[in-house]
Image (cartoon, rainbow, N blue to C red; front, side, top):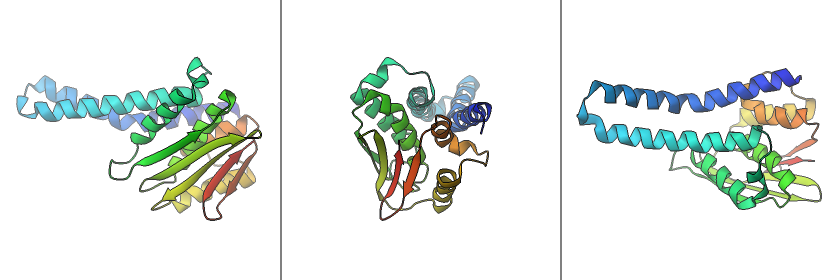
Length: 196
């Protein structure tokens, strides 16, 4: 895997994760331009929801894939950014909760990548717990009503054999592997992803 491939995967993933809400904003603006005020409440709702989703995702992506910044020094800021991102996924009937206990600032960016990876396998909400201890970062799905088995298998293949399939959904995992991190996936009861 090359750095160029990882960069392309990250760009593709970010574009994919924001495209729907950008399209919703464009559609709402088009309705406003048509001047039909019958839809004004709907337009306001679309604009509010889409702008909040875009803001939450952009802030999260900046922490996950951008240059390190002062926000990573605050566990509270990082945890809230991750919670806002998770709230932007799926629907309100199936939320993804987060227990965030990452004490070392240098572990927070990899922890966010783990959160992103595990959130991708949750189909109908759940709970993710992430913590660090003794130089390791562990993220685990502690509750879930349904798991995407195919996505979990792709993660297992990448952890066990290295990343070979160019799939933008795997961008956070690729970023960890490119950094030379050692990953371990455990699925004995819980789904646990450990990074050293």
